[in-house]
Image (cartoon, rainbow, N blue to C red; front, side, top):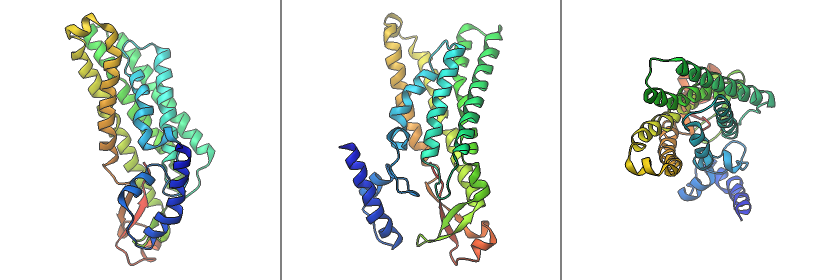
Length: 284
């Protein structure tokens, strides 16, 4: 049923929504929202469920819980950072600006670059914390729980930058108010990548900062002191709640179809239109 529903939405996008939008028509809002959550705006193809933004929370929360588990070993740190960046790489690729083809080599460069940076930083910080003998055990545990944030944030920037760096050399399509392609802009591509990278820094901030702080207080409650088995379920719920709140916050910072003034773009694009503002797909 789900597959059939996705196919129907894809057909609706190609045969109704896209032509009607390009012709200046009014598209039903509820139908539009359901469609853009599943269908890529550039290719018109269905996005695989685990890599949709609507699937980011349910498929990403178990990984977040794993990243924030206390007393991580080197092996577990490497595993969870690898799994997180593997998921992020697929999400970034699936929700990229697809007006220009992306070579497989670019995807692999971004993937290995993000995994390497995340694992290196996380393992390095863990080693430094373990050697910090002046810190109390409680302080050391809190700091260790906060380590995933700088590791994930820096890796997310590498992930977006490496996976989409071909857009900087080839540019991305910019559209006028009627949806007509005016040309490819490297400046718009730079704006798109910077905006996406910024959201990837904001996104993990509450996810990897709030749960460790909240759990450090909850673990002192008599209920959890006597029932240690409840720690993991409560920890998971805290991660789920913060993830559910931070994702829409980060995504809402910049619209997917962003706008930029023509005066900021290349001269050849400015000469091709009378519009003062053009639109481009930032990606998610």
